[in-house]
Image (cartoon, rainbow, N blue to C red):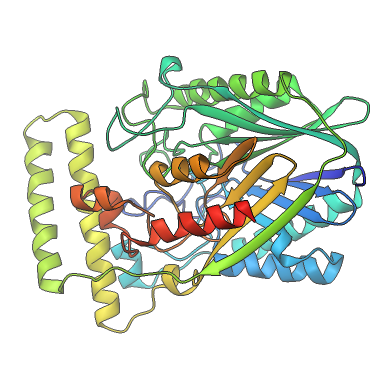
Length: 438
């Protein structure tokens, strides 16, 4: 077994002023400037026989077809196998679109992602992968986790404040042989939605402040943020506001936990690396008739208006609003498919890819889409490893949330706005476990 080499690189991917922001698609927002910069970070690993590339992006979605473009260009230029490259999104709701759309307004109007921005983004990602490999150095790696949950005012499940969550800040850190930390990957399961639809400023949301905290402690380190299974996780029941100050509180709390985790790591140099990747079919739900969905939209709109005008609590109004938005999205899908329209978020993401990277006793599993916490915890309970980290929105974004059967029975925004059927997530989990064990 040969010693580990690693390389890092980072590039600014902040969009130009005026480019539309994603994340709150029913509330069109053309950005009025940047509060903080967005970044693409890269970590390259090589133990002599296997190369692995991990790229994280401060954006909402990155389509599978764009991942394919990056991989092919990198393969031709460097020889790195396409299946060894993992590209994922932080899922900030204050960054640009780089995928198909899901909201009824954009679907019916034919609004698409900005081609100029996406083309530039693809070029920048290819560039940092090439740079990271070219600047590889002899390295050591360590991985671990630190508790960071409700007790710190950080959470949690957005459908049920007492529901399932994963209150750990996971880290993978790389240092050179002089002991200088050169990269820290932080993984946490929480929607970056501290900032809401009233903000028109570009921002990485709370991961911006994880980066600041890591940078202050380890100034030579490139920070990568990998989103955990956060399909049903957000700050909704736990935040103290929806401001940049609150984003900073959340981010620095998670960052402090990550720094503590790095401080307790055991770094090793002689470590094996393996990577496997497979695709599975995307299974689509049976959609209601258009007339049925139009009725559901009217009912949801009436309930939202009733709560809005009846001085209901903020959370009651917000949940009613989300129910309405989900019903509208599903109606949009019905209309598009009924009229033979193209839904890019479906067509460009098929089939779904599951990827597993083994680094010693660490299993890093990449899943496409926004995945409910129950699935993430199930994978971790079934994979026998020293540490399991799940990176969602990896190598694609899927046409909607990966939700559970229980969530389907309960209804809500996540299930209403998804084209996937309730069985799909269970197959995704089985494939992830199979690959991790292999």
